[in-house]
Image 1 (tube, rainbow, N blue to C red):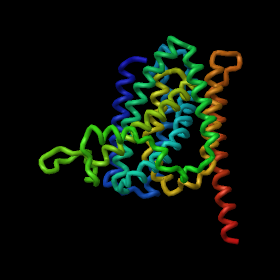
Image 2 (image 1 turned 90 degrees about the horizontal axis):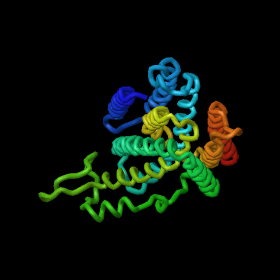
Image 3 (image 1 turned 120 degrees about the horizontal axis):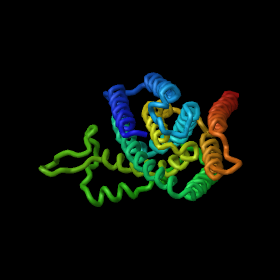
Length: 321
């Protein structure tokens, strides 16, 4: 993969981030608008997948991947990252509740969170690709970590809406408040203001710090997972970019439905364990095909969504009796 391809994709990413900023200007985002933009980002990812199929010889002329394999790997990685990122949204909701972030300031906080996630994941993808290229046994460590994470998720039977504030690690907040003076109230989107002639920082900086910290933890799950799907760094990074770009819009779609998807955690748990097993089998006679992984992810998330909606419908019937 030539540096010019990475540079071109970086410029495309900056343009798309700017578009996301523009469409959320003013801070007031309706569910209808968020749903439309969520659909736009989803379709855009599939359009990009089509360009991979048509121009893979331009993207990576020396790659061992065929155009079809590259496209399927991207789509599988994208859907995997998208499904895992849904869990991020519930944690963001807890952070906003814990720090009483005003509704109109949440789009900007999410923007900083997405930008932070992009930078952190680019670094981790680069490091991960180098590790896997030189030390294949690292795959088994990643696989064990994913399976362990999936088991931990399965053991936690609580709904997302029942999470307590203690689930958010306060370390970033403690560090920020120890090193910097922080005001008690928000001042718009500003991270800092001048008060009585001194530079002080707002709670928005604390919120962004906590979100950034959670981004690191989420990346520890998602980066190993996608390396089980493909070890092509460009496809890994592209899948992460497109999964994260629509995250803000998706948050506002799901914000009012946090308690409806009661089977999301079991679904994510299964996906993590499945991807961990897939990673452990890479290079063996029992290696799981990428197309099969794609089907498993789609089926699992669809089944979890339908089951959650069915359970909600049954509960409404009991209430109305």
